[in-house]
Image (tube, rainbow, N blue to C red; front, side, top):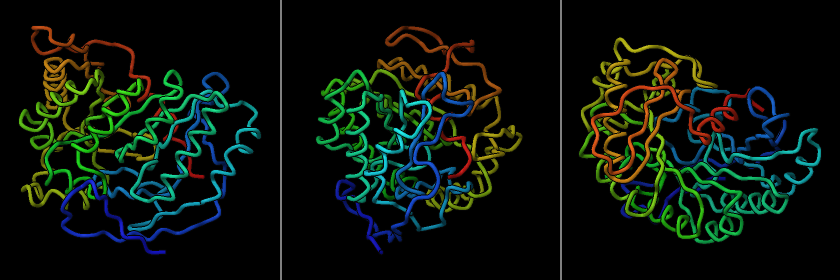
Length: 347
């Protein structure tokens, strides 16, 4: 089946991307347990699709076994009927389920979005907590559903920029940042905890004052109080698409140069990944945290992407303070959960 992927909210599109969506019968477990086991945490992850319709140039899934190949997305429409029996068959019932560690639960595909809402509804009816991670369009139907159990849901929305051209280059099938902020505002009005994920940062492009301060100010204005941030990491499968996306911005050759001398870490399923050099990463993250405080946000960074970097202590919002210093502190819970459920082997 060929579907033309076009997000109306994205405004004037430079072109329509064609994605081959294949209906399949899912094999393997529907719910993936968190790394390290679930007997204590009760944490599981679920991906409704193999592959992601957003087409983000920086997506690490391209280099994993979960990627069905360029321009392809696999979806089993029977997943809605299967979720109940899948839960009942578990030895350890879920306390919390993350949607979706290796894809996006709200792509511009009606069938998948509908399945996401119906699965969330079933999880909430069973008293299971739900964490939604997305770059997609948040509708009022979703806000109403999540708002029916605000104490058992959390949403993390990825947003890189408010700039139109940069957004289309990095996230071609995701709604523009301004549209995502409207969805976040709708969630906040419904009493739902929302975290912004300002990721990934690209040195000299998305981590600049000109790009981030307007975004942080808008997030603060709509009521977002927490944000997670980390720099993009490079792996062989990502470099070609990221280079191509950044060509209009003069980053074709500069991209790899910015990572010269940086460390190599193993990050979950992504395997060996190249990171921004430590000093540049530390200074960049400290600036973002300080800008966030000016806008009323507590900004933190994840240890999964920065194992060599102690946690940066967040600055109290609105506080008059110098750039934050490095201290050890507890990682953000949503990020720990995302890392835990995205690092399992393929179904």
